[in-house]
Length: 305
Image (cartoon, rainbow, N blue to C red):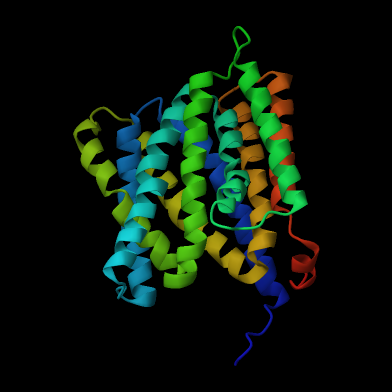
């Protein structure tokens, strides 16, 4: 059996830079989507993003691995998981963003790694005490946000949080199956074809609602940037980071994406969230980081940068 050589220091640094860029893109994408909703409806935004990302990812996957020779059951499984992670998630997420500040949307979406853990219990995945503590802390922060919705004039609405939480749950289900299916069929082929097949129902339902007349060119550019950046460039950089640095060391960086969404929302969209919201967000993010922090054995087995 051939053992792959350890990544060189320059390779690790390049991979880490790609992960940091990915986190910035994902955090900024939430703010970009919030801004685009001021010019386009959710259907137009998602159709554009799906067409751009799906076309590019499938092209890259076929060029790199050829056309998949999967069984019918595998095709149906990939399509079903893609339906949850693309059609369902995007529909729920943009509805939640429309009803919530971009910063709060980013924070609730940051619950995805936390939600994966209790969902994994249903499939027999073990959870450590540290992970359980992180999950508990993150949900305590979420409960605080829910209680804040009862205050008069609160910038956080119960409906908005509800849609965002449903979206995060859909993406957590997709993430859980992503890990298992990527190991069987390959990461790039899975993501490419799960997106291409999973978005078909959404495209069919959304097509009659696409409206481009009178849309500012910058808004159309924003849709292209979102589809290309968040769904193609960021994915490839993240996959490279996972390959070189390891999944454990890479996943903890994802906790920074909600922080970036909060800061960019305040800086570009002039969102003025009360201190109580920032504190609840901080509790959620600390819990998420704790739940996804690499175990000591995983850190020692991974070359240092």
